[in-house]
Length: 404
Image (tube, rainbow, N blue to C red):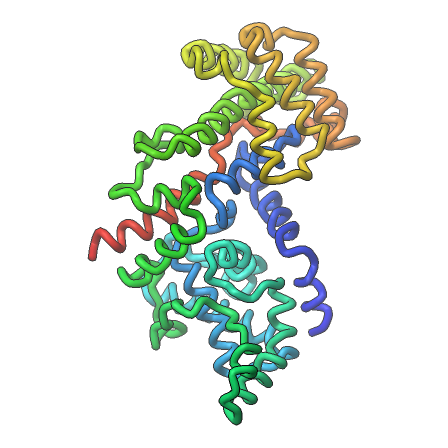
């Protein structure tokens, strides 16, 4: 049991990031091939705090704390807590499926073999929304249960204010009560009171963010990208969103050029193409990308990449110099001559050096075996800064309140 706790204890946020990276490898076109993930994640956290790419439905923000409060009410010991918590989370999968739920049920297919439990995916977000008051990792929480139970017993025999002050709750005091049949036949949809509670938590903790602003609108917009939401929002949010949009659109060209270079290299090395896009496909897509930039006019031509990087650094001061320098240099090529990057030796050299810098000997442009494994869409999905995830969570909340 101690080994499990030790495994859980190592940097909750970094482990979650690594799980997201691994999971993204299964989603075609979303991998951070050129090392701009730190900048992308900084804007994602600014716009949609508490979200992660592996989250699914809003009610998990309640299902997870309800599961852990069950440990507290059962007075589960620290030694037994990891196993009991896993058992309850797996039981919850079966309960949701018995309730007829499928969409967004974590572990729907893996069942008892599930490795990334909902608690791991939502732990950081629960703190960000003020639902989780315990300040440590999941492993810290498990280790704290013995002392928590001792404090509860002290309260039973003492009414002194000192004892009450020492009992810091692990969860927000306004957290709704769990349904009696939670582990028998559960639903993934929020009840109206639950939706109202979750919206209040988001707005109270993140009213200055786009997530908080959209939580209050009468209708959740459904565009592919959040900058097309068409809703009046505060000026400072418009500015951040505009920078995120420009970064996404400009860096998309780098991904397309990278794939064009892979297609050219694969053709030169006579690697069978199969059903992968070819040189002509990516040349056409780069032409369309240049058309888009030109159509954007002042929205792109006046974009200041330095300000964008400063905004990202304000959220994450640890963004590497190499990531910032690559973004700055690529933006220079894209803004100066977007049509010219297709055949620019300087732009191609920048892309090749960046891949080598991030992947070393596994760089596809240097390693034939790695190139043979290219699926034809390496990082070509435009950045949406977790809008797809945030949209689903907000929609869950909105629909429950609207239905009420």
